[in-house]
Length: 350
Image (tube, rainbow, N blue to C red):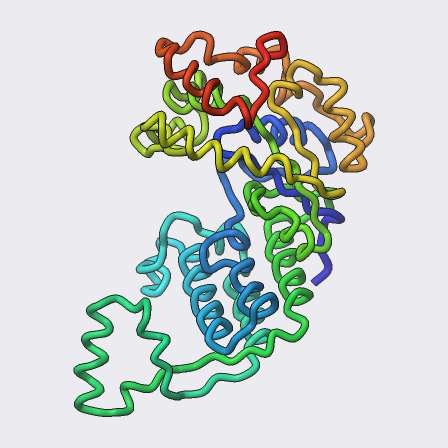
């Protein structure tokens, strides 16, 4: 399938780090496709997703991993793609609100073709590994049935040799993304398709992709989660982030441990197809950072057709240093103390 975009760029963050400012900025360009900010492309990073599949078929192939990873991927695509559709019982019981088949019309068709390409053959046989993670009730029913008919003990086994899998994965992902657009774009944006913790692996596998990662002062991240967005937009408009314990922030000590692990990855982020942006720096030094982004993506000022329409640094400056107005000063002081080796809390700069 011929794609309607030249380059795929994923925008990611470290959890409430403010990656939406990059989405808003890029929405102002006439030749960039940007989906809504709350729509995440989880087909790669999700448990049982394409990166796990790549591990099982390429990086660490065994017959057991190949079979298991394909079956897990099939379940994931059913969950991501299904809609609340009364005409399809299978979709009804698998629908979880992601509705990829609606957002990417033809998602199930391309997934079926992809599976046909990567599965070498299937056969029935003795395969106890299928029972290792099966629900207890299913396991019990299988044992009872096998006492009546020994054929019930046999499983459908999927064999894949993994040949040319990386190329097939690339074709599949970019073809799926292409389903959402009808005209040509220079750049196609996704949100959180890549995990920053193993970004080199993602960028090595995905041949036509780049990534922009947004980092942010953990004091502001904590304050933002506990108090919520000032405009109560997007994700925060629907839920109470403290109740859902975003980034483990409902317990300060857990949040600090969480941030230590997250921020430890910052020192190892070096890749020519990766650009790391500091949330505060983009707002305070708009001209400098916007030029870095433009150069990274090959954009020109002539393409910036709606400047400041979606991202205005003069307004966003109110989202910097919000921790200063946080009532619990001791919490902020503890964050500064515990994370001083992971983040520069120099008062002159922050």
